[in-house]
Amino acid sequence: VQLQAYGGGLVQAGGSLRLSCAASGGTFSRYVMGWFRQTPGKEREFVASISWSGGTTSYADSVKGRFTISRDNAQATLYLQMNGLKPEDTALYFCAADLPPWQTQVVVTPSEYDWWGQGTQVTVSS
Image (cartoon, rainbow, N blue to C red; front, side, top):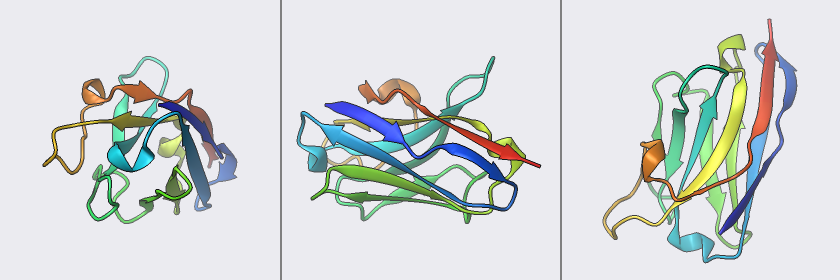
């Protein structure tokens, strides 16, 4: 599967952005999907994950209550709605796809994901 993330940009603190990740070349509804972010010199950080059906989600504590992950299987697109943005949310954001064992609903470890998008930059000014 190929993943294309977009929707990043420059926003003031307290503002909102919606990231999208378009998937192609695979059966999107089979994949557990995730969003990660990375800043220079740091490891890739888990942000959110969503089950293949969209019925189960998981969030990093740092974004819980502010970010919402969702998916549209018919459109093969993953979303991340980011509200109440803070300067510390500044990072390169990546979407990722995984085909885990049947009972796995969400995946939070970057190394378990098999496919990655190219990243979209989010910059939050104070």
